[in-house]
Length: 335
Image 1 (spheres, one colour):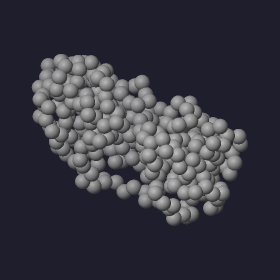
Image 2 (spheres, helix red, strand yellow):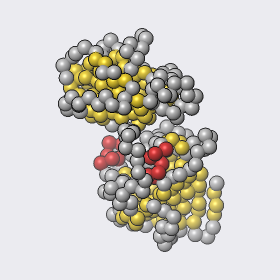
Image 3 (cartoon, helix red, strand yellow):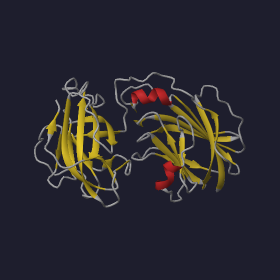
Image 4 (cartoon, one colour):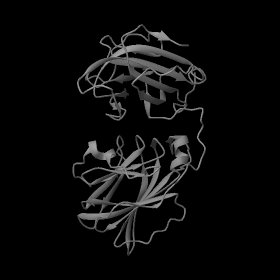
C-alpha cells in the first residue's frame, strides 16, 4: 500500500524477518563480515550497520514470519513522536534512489523510491520486541496476534553518529526460566536436520537408519543427522561450542546422547530442508582455519514425548547441542 501527501511518501505491509532480522539497503554490495562488528551499543541492540554504510540489519524479537512495518520517506526532518513506541534510534545510511526492505529467505519486502542518491538519516521505532521473543514465530495465517511492529522514517541529511531516542533498560516481560534460549530454528520435513562443518559440500548427512534415535554421524565423522520425533517440526536449537567438557544436566531432558565427530575449522552450524542453514560463521570452532580436530558432541532433547502426534509444527522439540574438543570415544547415552 502506498499513500502520498505533501510531506511524505508512506510504504506499509508485512515483512517476514528471518534469523531475528530484516534489512534496509540499496543495491551496493554490502560487507557481511563487518555487519555485526558495528552493532550500536546498548543492552538490547536494535540495529547493526555494515562497513559499506549502505545497509542496516534491523534486529527483531521474533525469529520469523510476519511483522507489520511502515516506512515514511520525508521531504524534511519530522519531529520525533515516540508515543506508543518502546524503542527508537536514529542512525545514518548512504542509499541510492532505489532502496528496499528485505529478509534473508523471503521474497516479501517493500520497494522504496527515494528522492535522490546520498546520505539519509533513519529513525527506527519498535514496540513488542521483547514480548515477541516468547512467541518467536508469529503467523497471520495461523491467526496469531501481531505483537511486534516497526516504523522507519527517512529523510535526506548529512551523516551523523547513531543516537538512541528511547531505549529499554530492562526486560518488560519475565521469560520462562525453565526453557533454554533459542539460537536458531531448524525446520524439518523428514524428521531430521544436520550438524556440519561446511567442508563436505553436502546439504544432508549420508546415514542409514536412526542409530540411537538422537544423533548419528556419517562415516567420515564431519557431518551428522540429528533426529526429531515428528517428521514435520520446527526445532528450537541452542548450539554451544565450548573449550572443555560441560557438566551433564540430566534434569528436564527426555534424552541425552554423546558421540565423537571430526570437524574442520573455522566454524560449524546446522543445515535443514533442501537449502537452508543456520547463519554461516555463527559458531566458531576452537581451531585454526582448515585445521581438523576430534570433538565430542552431546545432544540433549526435551519435549519429545509430550509432542508425539501433534500436527502443528510450531509445537517444537527443544535441542541443546554442546561441542568441545576431546579424544575419540564410544557413544554414550545419559538417559
